[in-house]
Every structure is written in structure tokens, then in C-alpha cells.
Length: 402
Image (cartoon, rainbow, N blue to C red; front, side):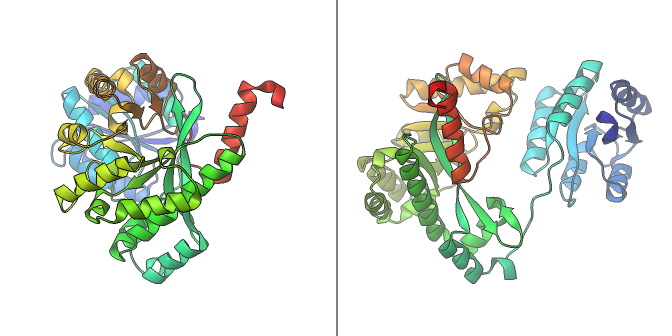
């Protein structure tokens, strides 16, 4: 029920505050507050929990960008919608900034704010109920070296899997392994809460080996069920400074009995190796051994094009920033279409990340993208749950096997 949500409108023009409030109340919002300055709004959010804040950008005193920066530091920040008369490119840039700072951005609208915008915002809010805040841990007693090593040894730090869906057949055609920590006291922790501590204690390679072994075990289990599901594992490019790494990864695969062709290593574009020559050596040796190699998060780094044409990739993974909402944004759509076309011209499998709506998925199909991942398809899930997804898919396509 929209009446249950508390909304705060932040705009230094009184008429705009009244106009936005009227639009929201007209479609069912009952708890709508206003603030005529960013400073006042911050004070309100500190005293009162809000579900959604609508923020203008060009305001006297503290502007909307500064407000968003401050809002992101709060322990339980509300969701955000930007409503501004600024250029669309500025609005989109600020929305991206807000997302990078961890805020949930439900929309970025150019003024005038209409009843259509209000309905769109209500729909997005209803589909995205408030999630519990991430546990933000600093290195300390819970994340000391011994605790991390224990979690790795006991399998508490483990791989969960996000399905990759073919946009031609609609079938699951791969699984990306993502680290999760099933902490006995804190529950399921996402990587953002522990990766910094893992790096600080020099346990990056131990985590990579744990995730790879988990992924291969899952692959073998799915094979026993009658499914062929290639697996992908994230590989920090700094690891390629180690000339022995390709041999170590091959040994793990051989020991598990999984062909290298069933394994793809995803290289993060915004991570730079210490020795550039070693990067190319490592990438080439991985391909010679038969492993797949994916350019992950394409579009975020500074050397996207050069990296793409100079490294023997087999797959291009387009960053979610280009995917989510592209159907409603001409600039974003142009970048997405160009990226898909580039990948196909280079002979790469093209996978889009960050698919959040049916519209995103339909647009990707129209422009010829090969595969997709994202919350609309499925978040990362535990291995048993992934097995259930595969079984459900088989029943849906072969009802006689029920």
C-alpha cells in the first residue's frame, strides 16, 4: 500500500514542493513531507526514517549532489529519486554517482514532474520493497586472519551461483560463481563486507581456489543431474603477475576432472596488473590451456577498447550501468547497442549484466545480445537452489518428465 510509505521532497522552490506533493498524494501516497533546503532534509532524515526521497539538484547552499553524498553516509539511507531541470546527462551522471555510493535510485526525472512520473515511481517502489541494510564490517575481531582462514577451511566462505540465460532459447547456459560468507552469527554476507579484509590478510588466492573448487564441484553435480552448465569465476588481473598461476588453475581442473573448456575466468576491467607483460602472458596461457576468458564489466575502465582487442577474450560482459533502464535512455541505449555490435564483430559471446526488468530483457533480445544475467532472471543463489532452478526449467520444457 502506497499509504504506508513515508516520502520526503527536497526542493528550494515552494511551488515545486507543492506540485510534487500533490502528484504523489493523488496516486495514494499519504505521508509526504517537504524540505526547502538540503540541510533541513538531512536533519529530517536523521530524526525520521523515510522510504523515499525526491531531490532537486540545483539548489542554493548545499546542492543536491552534496546532499546525496551526505545521505549515502547514513546507516540506513532511503531510496532516491532525482527530479531536476538540469540537463539529462547531468541528471544521469548524478544518478550513477548515487548508485556507486550504494544508494537505491528508483528514477531520474526531468522537470516538469507529471502524474505519469508519479505512477512510474510508485510502481518501482512497490516492486523494490525496503531491503535490510548490508552489514558493513571493518577489519576487526570478526574479520581477523584466523576467522577468514577458518571460514575458508570449513566452507563457510563459499560459492553461490548466478544463472546466465540465453536470450535465444531462454535456457540457463552458464553459472557465475560469486563469493558469499555464511557467517554463523551475522548470516549471509555479500563480498563487499569481507573482500577488503581478505586482501589485507593476503588470502586472495586462497579465496580464488575455494571458489573455483566449489564451482567445479557444482558443475560435476549438475552434470550428474543431466545438465551441462559451464561455470565462470572472477579472476583479479593482478594474479596474472604470477607466472605459475595458469598451471595451478589447470591442476585444480584436472584433479576435479572438469575440462578447461567448461571454465571461464572473468577479468575485471578496472583492475590493473603490476606487470603488463605478465598480464598478456598469463591471459594467453590460460587460453592455450583451453579456458575461456571474459572481459568483465566492459565500459567501466579507461582502457576498454585496447584491452578488448589485445587480449584473447572469448566473451564480452557488458557492465550493468549500460543495461538497466537503457530502453528509456537514448544515450545509454546507443552505448549498449554499440557494445553488443562490437562484441559480435569481434566474434565474442556477448553477455549483458544487471538485467532488472522485462523491458531490459526484451531490448537486449531486439539488439542481438547473446546472454543475460541479473536480478530479473535470478540473483546469486546457493548451489542447491541453483539445482532446483535447473530442475524446474527441465520440467517446464519437458512436462512429461513430471
